[in-house]
Length: 76
Image 1 (tube, helix red, strand yellow):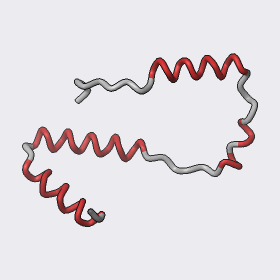
Image 2: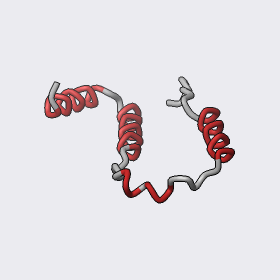
Image 3: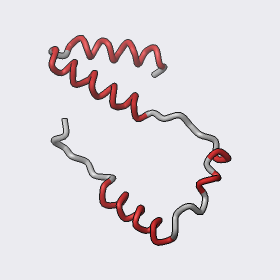
Image 4: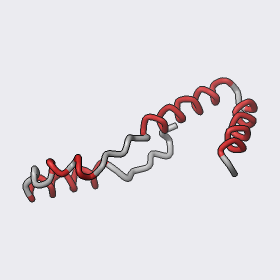
């Protein structure tokens, strides 16, 4: 499905929803849009190389593992 067909189908389905669900779709779409980030060329990140110690890197990896990749089925 191309982008225009997707937009048309999305609007068609959105119009079928009650106002409260339309608001939820709006909030979800805002969250998706804010999650899209600009890409940064790797050469601009090189000055960060080596700024963490091995211990700090392990701690960060543990924090990411503990706090990410969890799905809350009741979130919305």
